[in-house]
Image (cartoon, rainbow, N blue to C red):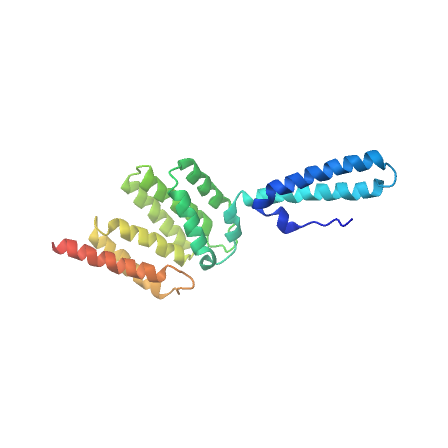
Length: 224
């Protein structure tokens, strides 16, 4: 009989139940072998037992790896996971479950800073600040202070992508409340966007378009 270990099977979330059933069947099979062939199959039993232990080991590893799905993004350039991260965070953000969002913030904070750009601490702080302001009735003054603190951190770490993202949020916040400040953010964003490519920041074109649209809308309202 052939005994092999299919790693893809072990790490496939959809096959977890099948995998556990397989383990149970193997254990029962071992029991029958030991009962009917106590001498002939002792060696085979040891190999099979080792197989089961290895399966359990990799199963536990797979569970640990999947408790924080964001771990797959660590150490990779922002552009490679931008859309996947955005969609995942939006789903959690709009879940209406504060505990789910807090868990997400903690998961982001746990990620290793492999690129030395403070990406995941910034991501966690940005998500937390936005959620508190948008969903938990946080006050505007506190929110702006949090964003400015994150902006300072992004500049210190030379994380231009995050600098643009935070500045964009500040721009959106001030476009109607403080048009003069919004114009300052717009000019700063223009300078930063000139220094970064669309491959580095996939939302570059959308950022430029949205900024122009909101500025035009603001000027129309001001004229009225």
